[in-house]
Image 1 (cartoon, rainbow, N blue to C red):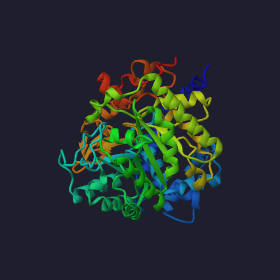
Image 2 (image 1 turned 60 degrees about the vertical axis):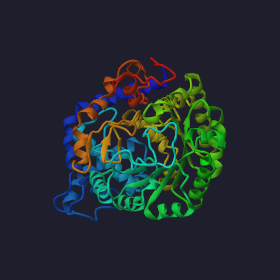
Image 3 (image 1 turned 90 degrees about the vertical axis):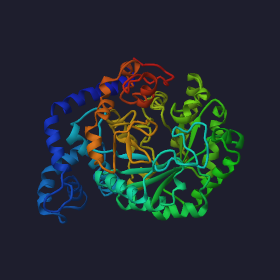
Image 4 (image 1 turned 135 degrees about the horizontal axis):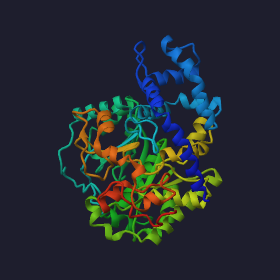
Length: 488
């Protein structure tokens, strides 16, 4: 029996016990996610405060709740092999608190499920504008220098940000188009940051002067993501469809590294003309100061439909993912270096799991547990925790922990999917997230179809749901981009 099968069997037993008690868990979660009538803070956060700070602070009513629940909290973290000092550091971290509150809200709405939907998106990627100074061949937004659709005014953008803040969104990425083309970007980032969201910007890097990078940091930007699609000007400029963009992008990355951010990521969209430069591009990104590297694949949306002829073969894709894993494994073994992830290729988790015998893999394409921030800030071996929660949070995050948002304020199942679920100018984000019929269909991963349903890695991988939709017409269909086929 494979390690994946063993993990799946263990999770299967645990989930049946948990789901049998779902009415109890939903009632308890609803109570904890609600705000106390006396102090106005969510009761769960008061429980966290009692754990990390003791009973000498806060609301006396919440303290009574906390006394009754602290044994349960201790039991949970003990199961995850976290000692008291580690728990205390975690529970005092604003981002961790916000994420855990969202999980509890999700349980209050949906019960305990596998994978677990949260109460509102943990992460939203916002196409802040459709305008762009480049004309990239693969752009899934079909962006251009002029706006192709109505976009929010500054005051409307602030209303949308407040809506997301009220719902408890933890991470907000300003994307595009090219978000730096909007003059009010810095004000929007400042407002989102002050609302408690960790702010990221995804840019092509060509407008990223030292002054711009400094203004982004001052506004509250914590993470930077810049596209680097090759190790040479010819290769990068080909996909970006703009001569000189490589040099400008490299300068942009250097400027961000000089200013300093919590994380600097570069993204590379894999295709047949840059496959042979993957390892060189990773090396270049690391020399420029990148701390994280994302390998994307071509998405058949927007102009990406016409560029899909550039897609790599299944064998070439496997070769690329092997190279990505080797670099990531070296970083982990040596304890330093750039961390490597894949997007739109949830089967990277499967490959990593197989190559490492179940020790190294990613969850929801963004978390491995080997991130240095966990060790630096919490002193924890979070990789062990990730391995334990993988069945609950693995696979494609669309509809579970993540959503897209377009420049008009419309919520999307994911960024490339042009399907409007509701507008945040006139609807509550949490209301849309919890009750939208399509989102609830996408969440029903026990009803996956085709080889994704048969594969023992369905809990860890499960396939890209947008790819299934765009190629089969069904959000729960098989991920036709998978180079492996099912492991049964």
